[in-house]
Image 1 (cartoon, rainbow, N blue to C red):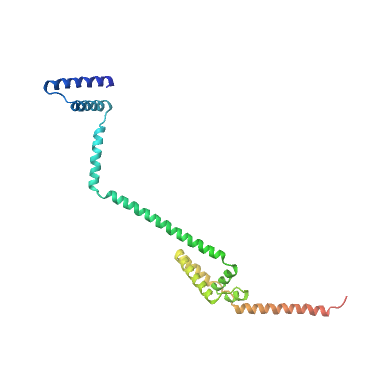
Image 2 (image 1 turned 90 degrees about the vertical axis):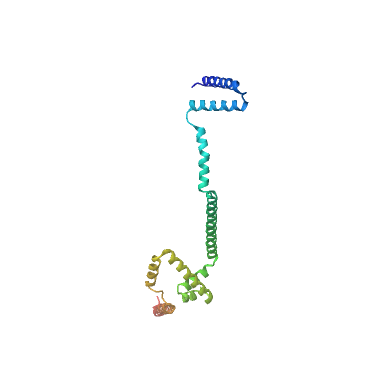
Length: 212
């Protein structure tokens, strides 16, 4: 319906209502305003279609019904959000602590002299005599500490790798063992003896050589 026609219809209805009410009782301003508002709403609904006012009226009862069925819903949601936030903070703190410990261990290992690292390697792998011959030897206390540290690292690796770590350890145990310190001493003595014999032969040839 066109807007001028709607306005004309509203004016006629208002005039008729006022005239009819004048015959009985004096009209009040609030009654006339409410009546005009109702007529305008009815015209708007006819021209635009739909019932938005009814939709707005139904939204509030639906929200109230939800609140009655779940009275603690808001508090539970807020509590759950706070708990998730605390868990995230704890996870970040734990990750930061592990990262700091790893960095400290790497820094300590880097700052350690190569001589000490070589001595620890010999002590952990059962080559203390080799370290002693080379001058890279740990004290008994340091050697025991190095062995405990190596054992702890091996257990941690086995727990992380599972059965594969056991297979690697068995393969390492089946490999040929390193020569003992006594064997190394014998080999060095034999090599020195052979070297002396070679030089002795050279000197003998020089003495018996005929002059040119």
